[in-house]
Image (cartoon, rainbow, N blue to C red; front, side, top):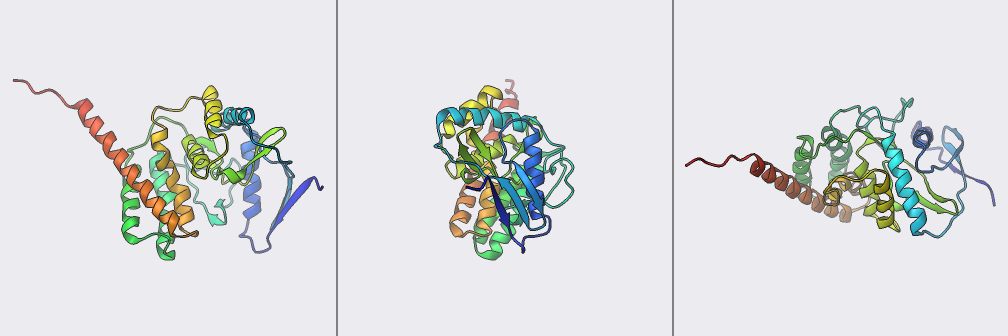
Length: 271
């Protein structure tokens, strides 16, 4: 069996495979999760090491989780920042992925990770206009800072669904990134979206290296808005329905946080 695998597409957008190579290199430089090795890259073509398959298991999952936390903690220049040294376009799948260097995660996430794909999904019939209004309302809450915290920009894979997690005899190897500076919970939410094997063990391993903030499970729909919007733009109405449902959950979560905040700062009336 060949020791490498070649992906080629003469009709690929300019810098498509070069962007993939830059993302892989940036993730590998973090020294955390193992990343597929790039053998060669040129316009319309990338050659990668072949990863031999193995059965998923809890030990490998825990190691991967801990290593992924190390990758995230390597950081990025800002929310939406491309890999260091890369000045070309970014992609998720074959769709363009906007770059930014925001200090605010919420502004970046709503503007550059959800709304661009929402408009495409509406035009393609992947989501109804009424449903899209729910997503826009959720994005207004996000952009307004409802979910901003003190987490610094993380070095995230950006497209970490189960199909991009390869289980090998030497542990997990990740492939096909949409690497950029983002929130570390986004990668974990994408692992959950399509059912990554041994996810609970991945999370357990992750928390040994960098514990997650309280309430992170409740924020999973927030961080799934981006991949659901991307899929609604090209893979059918079912994803649009899931996107609208996730957006409604985000709105409810923002409302609950707002009510808690008002209660916390309310002053008792004097007689």
